[in-house]
Image (cartoon, rainbow, N blue to C red; front, side, top):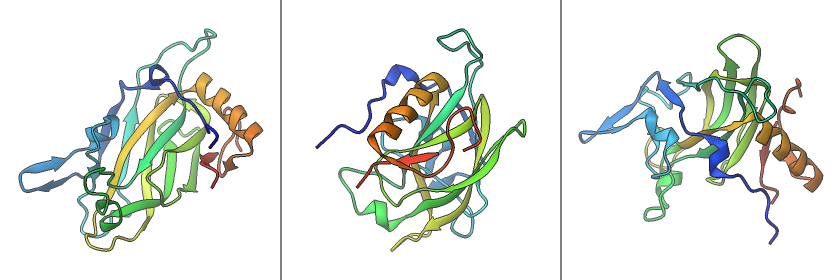
Length: 193
């Protein structure tokens, strides 16, 4: 089995500020939006009366300089979809997972929709321009078989220089491109089956 991509943890921006339009509180436990920046396998879960359509997550990162001295920014997002649990794998299909999302920058520099696959494997959404603040809106979901709650395990921001390099590497390997080439207006990438 070939290695599809390697991302160094130091290139993932973990100083993200997350906020959301809702959070589920269940049995005195909150499935809070800050869980999106953690690797502890506790998801963010929306708390809308339906399946979470229209719920929005806002992410902000500090401004920095890129390795080449240019303005830094997030060039891609890494999504881990659904409720991921090694002890209780049935929770993935028992809850909704995001299907179609709208991604837009708070400064208006981009606004697009894309579709994620129904998999707990990492999926990378490349952004058309680097950003330091953006929103993700749920447009549709993969339906649950038990609870009508939509879960996202993690969303991590990937620095722009690493996103560009990863995009080129995945393009050479023939991996699936669904959305935007970094620093242009043309990419969600997922593992090739």
